[in-house]
Amino acid sequence: MNRPILPGSTIGVLGSGQLGRMLAIAARRMGYRVHTLSPEEDTPTGQVADAEITAHYEDLDAIRAFARGVDVVTFEFENVSTDAAHAAAELVPVRPSAAALHVTQQRAREKAFLADRGFPVTAFAKVHTVDELAVALGIVGLPAIIKTAAFGYDGKGQHRIDRVEDAEGMWSLVGHQGAILERLVDFSHELSVVAARGLDGRIAHFGVLENVHRHHILDVTISPARVPSTTAADAVRLTGGILEALDYVGVLCVEFFLARDGRLLVNEVAPRPHNSGHFTFDACVTSQFEQQVRAVCGLPLGSTMQMRPAAMANLLGELWVNGEPNWAAALATPEVKLHLYGKADARPGRKMGHLTALADTPDDALAKVLAARALL
Ligand code: AMP
Image (tube, rainbow, N blue to C red; front, top):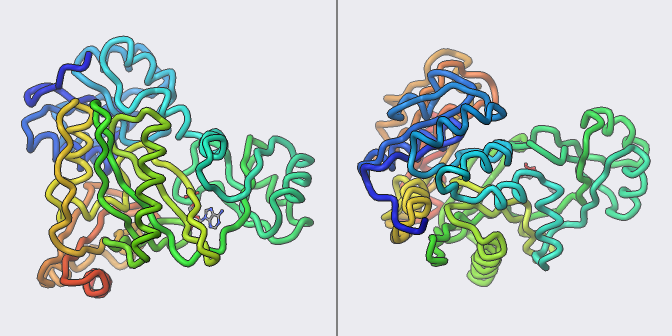
């Protein structure tokens, strides 16, 4: 079971978005084959994979057939059912494990897992009814955010509550499903740590990243983060603790709030490579995607050394409102790299690609990437 899965083998990816695409590019560069399974066709991952299988994640026969055709299964987003992960695990290694997926794919379960083990999180409560919400508001305090407990990402299914009398209206918006109420954090920075744990338990991280969100969607990442070294050390230490607590194999991202009162709080854990780690493709000796290949294949983790300060800016669908962006203008900027995900339909809010800029300092990289994006 623990023998390394060597180049020439086939990696199975559940999910077919841009994370799978960049994973597939890294894997193919190292001589692996890649198969992807998702309900869609002509997907970002499928376009660069050896085989694209179209099936629902609930179709456990299709998942088993998929697993029989590969040497290891991983996933590129966390909304795959744990039943699917278990079905695949009957046949081949699944990394990270179904157990890690189970914890991290549901906000309420994840927050409870972290809080129970002493990781710092904002005040929260699980709520199942509007009456529980009223009680929870009294415990958690205002302002608060209500989030659907499961299957949320990029701020989808999240609503701010400023007044007790708004609770009922907000409850109708989250759709009467299980939810989590969180105290709003007054933060100075949003940070993340992308790290990997190998089969041998070794951990490697890409340092602390500084993230700026717009409308709950990541907009810009700056690396290294412009925060005190003690804060950075705390974030790395907490991330290592979370990797251990989950007995994790693979790449994961821990998102943090640095509160204005100095507390560092874990916001959420993504059990996969992460948007805030995209800069590693251009700026680091080993990218987060190659690291994922190495970890899930049981190979030694690669050096995470960052060669140049970097900043990444997402390109969302609204950039296309006036037609195709002016790629040539952005690419005329030295040390700016373009990544597009092969998505045909540029809907507002949809992640279509990103730019990475390298420079002498994080501030310069940020200015450069924003200037390049403005030229689009
Ligand atoms: P999430 O999907 O939970 O990561 O939330 C997306 C974004 O919403 C975060 O990156 C924050 O910008 C904001 N957000 C979520 N939860 C909180 C919170 N408890 N306090 C303040 N901002 C939050």
